Image (cartoon, rainbow, N blue to C red; front, side, top):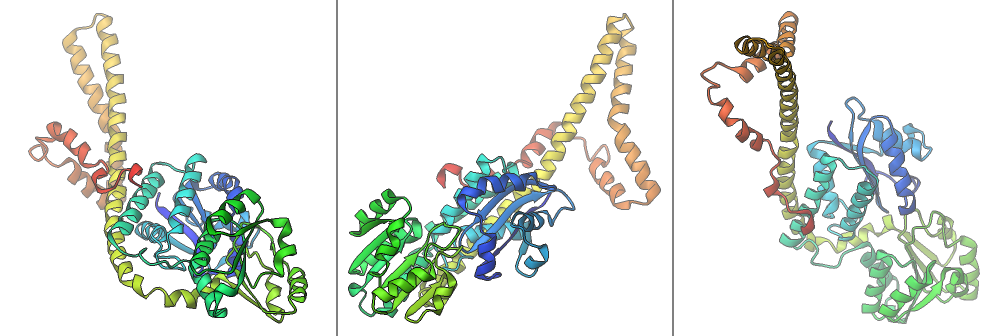
Length: 446
């Protein structure tokens, strides 16, 4: 069963499609349960952020499209609508993709740190929901070790570049003196918290923070010298805002066009800058049609972000080299575990046959039969039992002309002289097939 990632992101899909496929935190557990029940899915984890929705999974052989089918069915979208927008990576490419995502190399903002926390959240939810077997568990642990190494060994996170930072930069460009602006922040999550701190550093005149849970808004407001508002008081204070930055997890817009029309009238039509950093969007898209409203979404920030990334690109090259090495280490373990599982199955089968033969011999001895004859029977019975299945398959391979299997058997069994030390070396062989645990960090180090 190969490792597989299926999904879409800001590079492959427009904002409106990403909105439709987004899975919020409250719905994630139920969605994961439905995914794990979908035919063909063995293990799975769901990652959904403002810039991507991805499924990391192991599927049954021949079920390579199962994750994509579930994604379309879960959201009530015709599978044809997703063609050209979804990507699918398998094996080495899937591992590399996850490592690049977790280190911020695949983000809209190169090297942004928030994505690692989102990957860890996806891992924890999958773990609680029973979505992780040995394969994905090991993959995510290696992923966290790699991300830590990239952060430690490179300067990719040395400069403050984030979606929140880019939004504040854009606000600075629109308001030459941001210290004279009143800013309304909607939400109280990581993005809004980062934006609030950047605004505090730039001495924004006033910072208003509106959130559904007032206590969260009060906590953030106390940290940045702002004022907390309940979300139902949003329209009452909207006209005060020169800049509005919104990043909530709401499924429907929290800021409607008619609310903005009324606010503009109260402001005597002084311009408003609206920065919508949420997916799904927080601000009704038709608000952009209003005179004196300047509305930007996350996708509009790309140019501002590009100007801030030059110092990170050299570090990104170093990060890619680290990822390439760690992908190779992980895949060596992944491929080796197949041999380990086969060997374990072989030994378990041999142990069962030995126990059956021994039980038969003991019953013969208990019935009073000659011990010498019983030993001969035991040896004959055990030899026949162990060789019956491989002998039958080799005869069938010879009839079908399957030379690959015949050559493999010849290499496996060889001659007596070639295998004279095998009986003494089987424990060393077992150890050689174990995962290279020394190549990854312990989960506690992440």
